[in-house]
Image 1 (tube, rainbow over the protein chains, first blue to last red):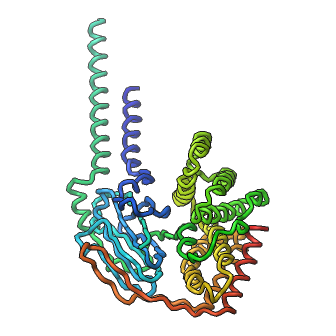
Image 2 (image 1 turned 135 degrees about the vertical axis):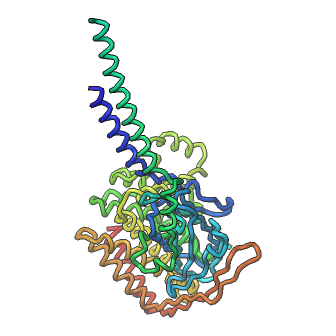
Image 3 (image 1 turned 180 degrees about the vertical axis):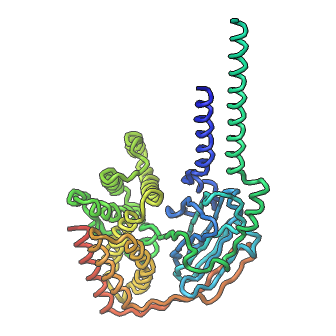
Length: 143
Length: 311
């Protein structure tokens, strides 16, 4: 009887071990850095699940004469995030935080309304889970 | 005899407890090792997992695409000329909400009322805002969308009675909460339908505010720039295309065709780094505007609005 109970207990522990990574990422956005109060945070800022070796792309329609604040966060296991700002029409990379000490935020202005891609990647992944929690925040203000 | 039996039982129990403890330790150790991120096996994995953008530059490597579309308030505020005044006759009657019967109709109406809430917010016409918030909340409740405020309804009503300015705060909270909710729990269908309603209604309001082509050319150019947003809404909706939303997609395709006649071209001419580390993305926008194309575009917006929103 004791042995049976022990077996059930162990199996339960093993199951808990394997499901330990089924985490809810919903509140990860709270860990993104915030701009000062003069910016309005976009409702499309969000938490997400980053997958090992995969990019996430944010399509940002940036309005003329606005200043944008972008910040990104990922759990320690995903490592510091790399992000690139790309001209959606020409695919030209405008900014890469790899050349900016992997800064986790960037401020930029746009003088003509433009579609931009912001691509996120976790190049220093140390997790053995398939995904880890991450988030990005976009805020803007009029110039 | 009794003592011998007790001794035997204790011995047997000890063996079982020992086995139990051993199994537990093995299980915990296994569980820990499989979840561990700082152990040596993972360090090996870290080296294997080092990736760069260049290695995964193929489109297939993009796991998920997130659309950051401007809110209706941001859009109306961006386009409207400083010379145009608020016109209450443009406001969508809150009673139209009752004519929405299906899930799709109600979802589109949520977007349309969000656009009206945005319009009155931009002009600080607080007296209209509360009715819009209530109708948005009712429609959202009908289709099971969380506004995150259901359990605080009475408290909010009291706060609004005491301080009418608080209506602005709740206008943003409701918009943000609904968008966050559908982003987290929906496959994209609901979000694209809300945006469809919001943008068609916003464009209708903007067109009505700027009826004279030559007088408001700058605002009309800004209106045409919204094509880049429509492209995204259409892409989002097409990715969840089915029989029930096919007619909505057809309307968006027709609006998109009208947009395309303006020949919008936006280019980045230079990128400058400021001393404080911020960046300037400099560019030009070229738009081929004509009265004929603008009139055709207006007609398309009117007919789509009549069919999807105010019918």
